[in-house]
Length: 564
Ligand SMILES: [Fe+2]
Figure (tube, helix red, strand yellow):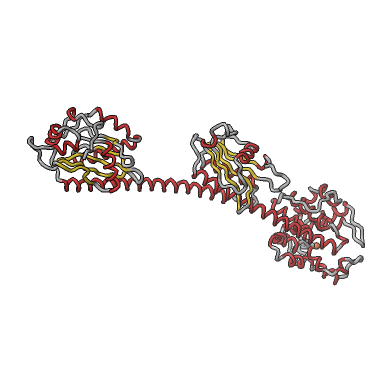
């Protein structure tokens, strides 16, 4: 067999074949073929390991290409082209073996897995019997492709090994290296899992923080501002932006008032719109990441944007807007971790927008139901048409004067419209009677608060107005109906409603009498404060007296208005 070519012959005369090493300048350059510092370090560890067990320096071959990556300085290497095929065969066999064996000289090859993807094959020459000066090593010299004299000189300086011992030792080294590689891989896996857990924990913490503050009453702007500010603590971007899309088809361009940003960098509303259009992102798009592979070059028209992640604010098939992170704070590229953060937050914001939309639709539906009910009352009792609307407006004005919360004011608005809904159950001839009511008729009319309560009791969205409907005829002194409650036993909404209702009743014309003048009404209310009506409510009434007078004169014409 001709294993060694002329071109790859080693100048053996220059070598010291004793067990001590001596630099071979012809081979030192091959070390530069090792890939990277870490690989060199790994090869160094392997060579030290092998030298420790076998007491000779091995040559190393690339297990993928068969190229020589380290030539031994005190050992013959052999023909590199021929060796390449032999080491690849050993690599495929995945166990140590002899690739040359003859004349008492053999070459041991040891496959070593560095990791799942790369492998190395180590080779070294050994002598398996005592060699004396008269031995003929012609066959070995041929294998080594050096002269018989040089072969004899080298062989006589070598320790004699048993082939079996060599194989056993090689297997032990292989096992040790494989175990170490596995341990390293496990360490990498643990580190990756740890990083993933840390990232997931941050993501969960962010979502928890946002969710905890996610209320149906929070506006899109409040939620967007909060979310982007928290996001800036988790994702290393220079700027964050939330852009809500118009909710009507008539208005196709996003408004700057629906655009919210956070971070040190800048991005404008129109800039994000142009970017989304340029990238042809559709409402059903997946999260989009653009790094240098996209943003570098003449085709990229956004010089301020080097890296960007854009995700939709979606819920089901509905997209309510876009969330973007722009420019990595450290100039690096955005990856899946950052995209996951934004995607989760985008979904959360999308759900919030969807809930807000459903809430608005429900609120609109409730308003329409209330309007229908008010129309029914007005149709039933034409003499008091408009009364419910005026009482609602007056009660709201008093509530605002008393600094009630927006939620309470909104409830009072609804309660004012519905406070007499029970009159639907009162006989028409009584409601439309032009003269004064008899005691029996009045007792019948007095049932309307409880009738109204029963009518609305099953409508959950109107649950808050029930106390005002049931108790708006109670009196501060306990002389009212239906339960004869007094003072603060009467719900605040009902106490406010009582003043507004009485004022409008006294100032309105009736078939049997004209409405009272303002002076008389004011005097009655002042005299009744602390007796028929809550004095604090009456005080608030007079503080807002001018506005209430205007309401009574129907200067405010819009029937239903959202006060909050
Ligand atoms: Fe009433």
